[in-house]
Figure 1: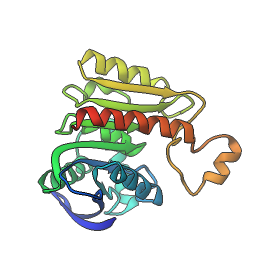
Figure 2: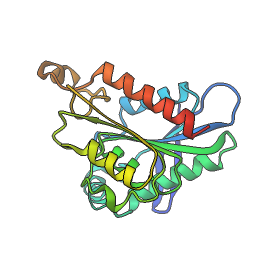
Figure 3: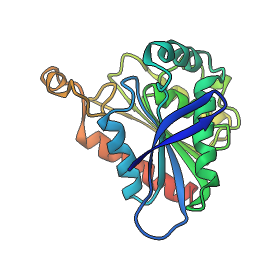
Figure 4: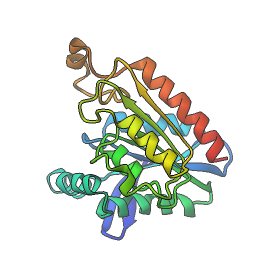
Length: 229
């Protein structure tokens, strides 16, 4: 895994890039981090995708400074109006598309804030989108027309996304977008992320859930096998 400079319309940001072992070309995946930024957990996600045969990039959406970036990015996913975050993500997609090791088929995976962006950019040239518990207003009909196929994972006990799994499924059905949307019982927000607060969260019965996480990734890889082939 290497750290690279990614040129975007709004300047240069850093990104993680991981190439799978063996000969290419391979499909690509853009990984979008959650509100904690570029953590060890982000690295684990990049490596998981690479180990499964995907050329993977994770742009640092907070590269211009967390205090400056967070309000701007949250406003973007809440309004559904493309801005600097979307431009950074599309620059990461363009870098993969131009890489000789990439087939040109590219998906996007995101968590929380990144999940909101994964939905927001799903109509913008991607071949599949895999949001985990996406942040945002939940007004999916406003920006998902023309979206790529979506495989989404929600948590039933997530206070940030009450009832949004079925709502997303209805919008995607209405728009004729192929999808796999699942809401996992007994888990809450960030069930697929291992964070520094994990020991405390475990005491409360929240936090990472291995069974739900592995099932979500099984669904994602099956979905990607179909739509990125």
